[in-house]
Image (cartoon, rainbow, N blue to C red):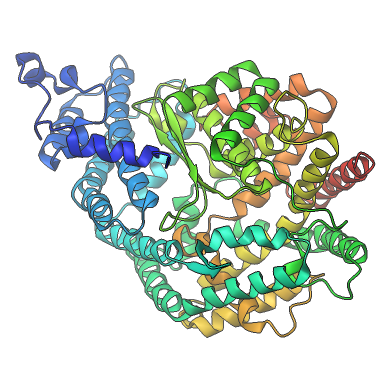
Length: 601
């Protein structure tokens, strides 16, 4: 029987709730204070017109702020912000669950246009109101700093453009969600085809890889056309906000206070010097083990010793059960939180046609729950993805203890430390509990592939991030997709050494079209590289003292967005540093751990 996803459950709720579009009660107390009748769930708010939302913003805007009531005022603001955020998330989940569902897409678009756009105008007034008051509640210094930036870059003219940008991003995801191929007489998703890359038959791997590449190239023109629109729109948004270039705007939009674009470029140079040789050593070792003359793109994911692909689970239910056992073994409280997500059905993990590719964790703050969305196909990467998104979920649980939504706005560079650290720490438990994913030998294989993947990832991250720097430093050239092809290929040859791409020029140079962050979340990628460096430091501490490492990790997560990046990294037991020594130490730790695990296979 087909599993009912949480997205389908939400659809039933949305269509059957049948509430009045007005306030939930007509009591006199609500007239005086609308928050007295504020709903406890987001169900009724899903169908509110803007006039209903506006009542709450009116109340906040008309309040007189004092030192005595500012905390209560922030709490009320948080209630409406959480409600709006959860409504948008629920509608986005519906859209992501089925990219062919035009009604779900329309419902989400209408929410962005009719609710989020006017609410952002009102949020700007509330930011200005708080900033003008000169009040600074305890634990609110950094959120106030971020708020000043938000207020400075806000432009009413950009609100409809941001909605347009989201629609174009959705178009990109629709293209990807519709990508299927015929394999062994069956129509399967492009994501499902990637499992074949682990087959020991090299001819089968190459056939699958070429089929996937051909399917991507069918959408080359469509993605290129969409890209030109996105780029032009982003340049207009930056200009409206008073910025000479989009990168400067995005730096402020992301509230990147602790590093500059030039420091990022120096970090990429460190990766070129320190990590690229380590990645080449991995590719060369695998080439020798495979007994081939050149490592080709379809040789990267196969076990280099010729063993069959790892089989961590057969069904999504089995994936969930085994993951539950891992978290129980790491920490009973983490296990209880994952069990809560299972019980509350906030997991949508299976892969299917027209489901948006990739994975994410989203917040449902009114329910007090995180939501995990991914596309499991039965490979070890699925296990790592669930560990990763669960790390984000644990971050949500820890930071939710903070009273105001502005305090919970975690810098993305550290949000990814939460997820990547959990990947590495949970990986140590793959064979250490009943109903384990693997035998000790296969667990060693899995962990080696993950640690090697970290070393292979940093150079790829550099390609993605440096490509975006080039795009927004040369927007006129980047508007032409063929110029993007050339720049991507140039960066690829510098950083992605060790794999032979001869004769595969079209596939190599269009790699930028396959990286969704470039199209949907511009400039969001350096965070992964920085966070991976932080996660390796957390992992190193966990190897020596797992109990203390976990305690420090959870403490850092509980700080939410109330501490700077250096402070958050330090709280987790690491340091926010992009220098050659820090990276060199991380590479040495990973390579030494890989050597130790090799002896267990």
